[in-house]
Image 1 (cartoon, helix red, strand yellow):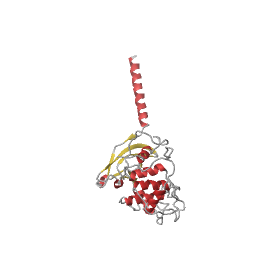
Image 2: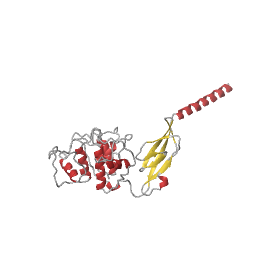
Image 3: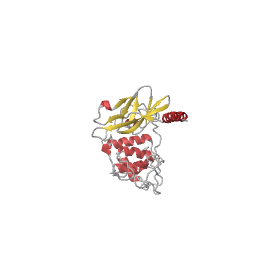
Image 4: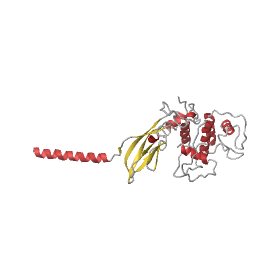
Length: 300
C-alpha cells in the first residue's frame, strides 16, 4: 500500500512540474533592464545600446527610443519597452529607461506655458475625434502666444461676426498662420498636417527654439519645392509628428485630440490625474483623456 502511495505521489508531482513548465512557457518573460542617457550632458557611450543580431526589435514608443541597424538610440527621457521577436513570434520584452542628464528638460523647455489654452463646446462636449478647423487652431495659438492685432486684413470668407475673427486677425498679423489664398482664409476648413507643421515651427521660432532642419529621413510624398518641406523634416526630427511608412500625408487632416497632444508636448504641459470630469464625451476610455484635461486647465 505504501509503495502504491509513493508511486502516486511521484506521478502527481511530475505532472505538476510539467504543467508548470507549460504554464510558464505561455508567458513572455522580461529580460534585463536597458538604461540609456539623454540630454545636453549625456555621455555618448550611454546614448545608444548595441542589440544582439538575429532578432527583430520593436520599440513601443519611438519618441523615447528608436532602432537603427541593431542600435537602440535614445531620443528623449522616459521609460518604454523593447519587443524582441524571432520567427514572427514575441519571445521577450525588455524594459528600457532613458535618464535625462543635463540642465535642459526638453527641447521645448523655453516654451513652457501653464495657463489653459482651449475649451470645449457650449454643449459641454470636447469632440476629441473631430478634425480641427483653421479657426480653432488660430484661437489656440493666439492664446498660447497672447497675441493682439492692430491692423485688419480683409478676407472674403471672414467677417467680424465670426467667433474666431480676432484670433485669426492676430495670427495673420504675426504670420503664425497664412491664408490659403490672397482673398480667403478658409476659417472653417480643417487644418492639414503640412499647415500644422509650419505653425508649430513658427511657434518654436517665436519662442527662440532652434529645431534641426537636417534631412535625416526620406519622405516620399513631399519634395524640396514644397514651402513646408523643411518644417516637416523639423517635426520628424523632434518626433513631434510621425510618418506612415515613408509618407507624411501633408494634406491629411488632424483630430482635435492629436493637436492637443502635440501642443502639450511643445509647451511642456504637466499631465496629471484629475478629480472631476468637465466634458461629457471625454472619459477614461479615451487614450488622450489626461492630455485633453491638461490643455483645458491651469497646470502648476
